[in-house]
Length: 458
Image 1 (tube, rainbow, N blue to C red):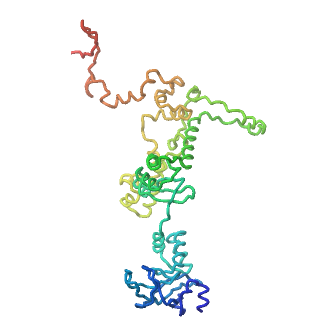
Image 2: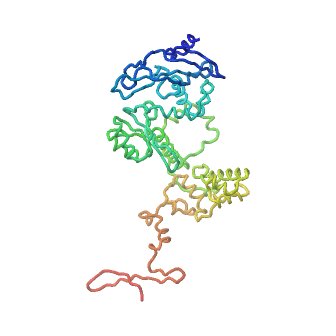
Image 3: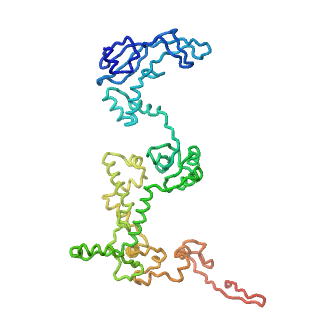
């Protein structure tokens, strides 16, 4: 029996007097060390004088799906060196025992591999099926006990932030872009923290980061010789945003193809059209209006034809409130669950349908309502100049959209500010509710001066 176990489990070769018993569903192995001496862990001197003996219990890898437990008779030796600080020490069997360990190195390595691959719950389920029952917390402790690998020199460093609590607490993750493995986590996303990390780990040549200004400043401070580049995601994101704005601005320049042209056009003609450069489109703001503004305006959609965020949020909140009400939740409980104000929850709960809420959200009264269809039409045609749109009059056509000389040199919102703020009002005006007192400007000339001053009539 011992010979077969020694071939199956080579790490048991240092034991003698091995016996096997089956206790319930486990295999229990009894044995002791085959060596007559032990090496002191402090001074390295071999000791032969035995101090005492005790029993030690170790968990080992499973055999044929059955858990294995090893019970060893361990001896404690006297150290023969008087200057050694260790007066007594316990013997260790190479490849089988380590100090203070309750598992063999083979089982510890197996559980570490499972924990790294599957982490807590999934790793515990797999280990149980392999014959090594273990809890998820134990696997997580094994991961934490593994020493961190040395970072070394990183030629291409990736920097990005992540949310520990969205909108409140953020951290920074550092990635080696050559191996695509995370290197370190920083507690915040401040420039000083990132600069200190770069100073402690010199050798970075390229910093691949997002558009955050803190990372740019930290990179210039900690690694001034490194080249800073934008990552791939932000490049594609910014390109898509600009393409979307360009297409929306020139939406009025697109004209549908006549029916039947696609069938009659040959491949040679299509290739010839592709080779020829496309004509430069004329801005729609310079073209006269030959039709009335589009009256089929949908308030639930934005200028790009997508559903407005307010409508989407209203639909999600209405569905959540109705679901919680169906489960018997109170209004106070719904407020705590969704993080909404009580009046908001009451308004959603009292609504008879979703359309009632959407209509109130999208059809709020505004002075701009009569002009919205026309403004949307002009915006889609390419006229995106705000002062020009403000001075447009739908009934005047093209001439109304030309900026006048009176408004070209100043902001178009100056008259509005003068109406809203008291400091822009005429100081000669009387308070609200009383008749205004007219003011005049009369030039006064004197023999010694030609200056003009304003005087109010007595």
